[in-house]
Image (cartoon, rainbow, N blue to C red):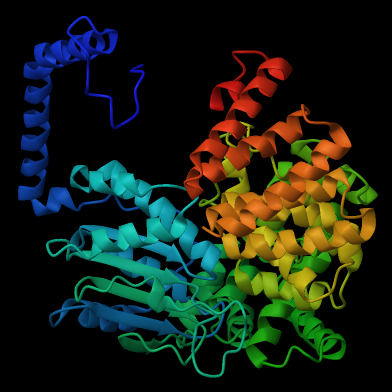
Length: 609
């Protein structure tokens, strides 16, 4: 340490000055090591230049389709693949194709097939889930890490890879994609089903322009259910026209022989009218049971009539075809494994992606008996999920991040999820919704727990869905204020600052109503709001919150309580940001002395201060 401020740190009284000797010692060390240090820097420069000279090496990223929902039952579509190839390979500048069509019609599988067939034509192929803003930003974060791993020349990206600042990550990756020499990439924006188009007033609407690189190069594929999205060439993905293609899916999914020549199978294929997802579901059912194609067709038609009676809101012909196939599977699952059917009902209140054992196990506290039995151990849970997988309703979610501290997640097609919402759960079930919210709230880890950020990121999509229930007034908010506080913390840590503010303010309002303005739990939310406003740069508001929390903590717990000292420390940081350095010093010294008494000289919290 040199005992001088920045104005005096290179002014010394004499060569005998203690600070002069320290500086001289360090300069001597730097001079002596300069040769090897500079040599290493030149080697790095040569390596980077060599990488830049080879464009294929500089911008090449190993293909990964972990975020894509892939199937083994893709058939035909040669005409559409040829149209896509022509649109994406001819001409100059940015090439783009929009695949639009019904849910379950095979848009994602068509994009996967194109990517696999033409992967050698691109230096990098990236898959982004643009279902909502949370999903696409998480996709960009994963994409950034892959680029850093495979591209030496992208080392500048590392400066921006801050998991709490996802907007900066998106901007940094877009800048890399916009590089004048990085022109051979392909990006697939999958599930763009809630687009910003005229007439869409949904508050969760997504504007794809925020996430598209601006440079006039590269290739883009967009999959969407909306016929109003128009990015590049629009290609309508329709039903399978040739019954032989439908029979091939039935054959592949059912693992039965002679399907192509079976007249009953052909009749079933015509009844399912070329919808790949319905065909795959029917095949998965037939793979599990000894039912004949003729008997299945009878069951399907009976299910169709029952669905018409009980679900008049299911209006489209295609939805009824899909829902009927799933209903048959669901009816059989209920006979085999009641826990599996209950899990499917509960899933309607979570996001359709990445549901995992440890998350649902939180529902054992005050949850229904069936959930306690389902989550008694992981073997029981896995068996229940396996039944759903066997019938084609659920699959392993390859994009889930459960390989660090928690188990692998499972996901379902968005169409299947809609069916669980509108048909399996015909009416709103506040108990089921409450279980989902409790599971998420109880599973939020403390910030000092290892891998806590990763767990919070996995929770974010489920949290967003449950937050929607609260906004819509479907849940008793007064009984969930502690969860709202937890939700705010997750959003704060994940860089969702606007949402965090809304959650904290509602939690604060609920706590003030339930416990009063000076309750310690109320003050915890006040303190966190201070931290949020500090992150947002609203420093005067942050100061008001911190001072209110400090006054309340001192009154309730005394000046030396660790919660009091935490707020004192926060105020020290805030005053430093405000340039009020004398006050910052006073607060930091007070926090330091208090922590030394409470925790000792070497505690990490003491050392932070």
